Image (tube, rainbow over all chains, first blue to last red; front, side, top):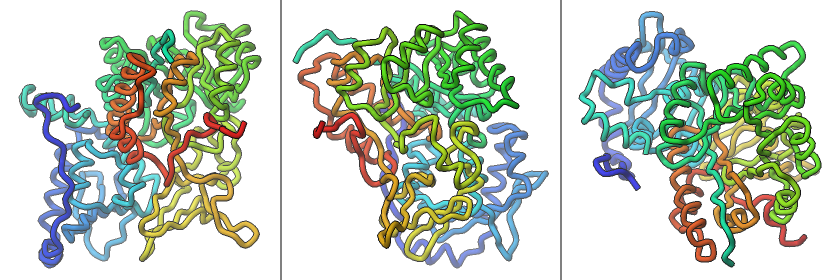
Length: 162
Length: 338
């Protein structure tokens, strides 16, 4: 059903346990810095500044279960920042690396993963829904126009929308 | 079993522009949407359309010769009447193909103020018989009615035969206790109801608590369910909670289940259903794309050769995967004991 030229569907996988053992011993700062830098890049480009205002002053945890990684960060008026311990996230979202990628590619629906117990959401549900709807509302094709050439985008954004 | 067939319009949900495009790209005939306030029954933070995104969505759908319907299907409280009439005006101004309304006065306003605007009767109006539907037709000129999910196929057929109004039925998606437009269960727990505030369970009242071996759901402090590690949860509504009743703990109101009528499709086509509605404006563009694709293929195949149609196993598996709760059901459509 996937149109020609679109990316193949992401296979099911879970990282071997040894990965989590190793990653959990590594310093947490680099992934947190990478994530917050990526989020900051998206403000004004992928999502409007107004739409991220509800996230200012809120604390988040992103848990990649099979990677043994928990990224704690918070929204500030100047963008997203790595949170410092002691951590007290208002919203915690947990899934495997594969499922986070599939959600990003819009191959999986978050409610479907939630019903299947593959996505866990804890804390402020209203904040969680705000984040989910913010991400669901991104029109990637439009957001990335001007960043990548149209031919590159066409194949990838077709994959996003099925 | 060959009969003259009229393909029902596949009517798919969209909570945002990407979902609308996904519906159109995957074969929806109509996409139904709402504005960003409580004028519709999916009033969640960050969901739905403002004027600019809806204008763009309508242009996209019309470019592909598809329709956009706007749900204005909640009941305006007296103090907020103007908010609902402004929503009708905006929908008309933007050039939507129809509005889906439930409130009698709002339907009257739309009919009076925008006579060219096509009117659909929402499921929230709870019109379950042809007399009620014909009343709305005779007084306000409604063109289509969405039937509440309480009728058997025979009753739907009986209704269709006695009304000039096109009949739309729910085909797939989450079920509720089906007292549409009259449900006060969540208002009991949270003070807000789907009928006026547009949400069954306001997100601010919902808490999911992870337990060592499962998960617990609370609605405004009320514990409504606890799930084992392998149990599939449903949406956090009171109607789908497990309660202790006379010493027994069970789904006392209803089991979380999803409607799936894929196997009834030849029957729905035969009796003249004009549109099939897919539930789920709160779901993501991925869900919309997946469900729309499955139903488009099924309707096309069914209309081409109704007597040869059987649901594809892969399609059933896909819909099962996407569904809420532990079971799928034909709901009230199939009542073999009658």
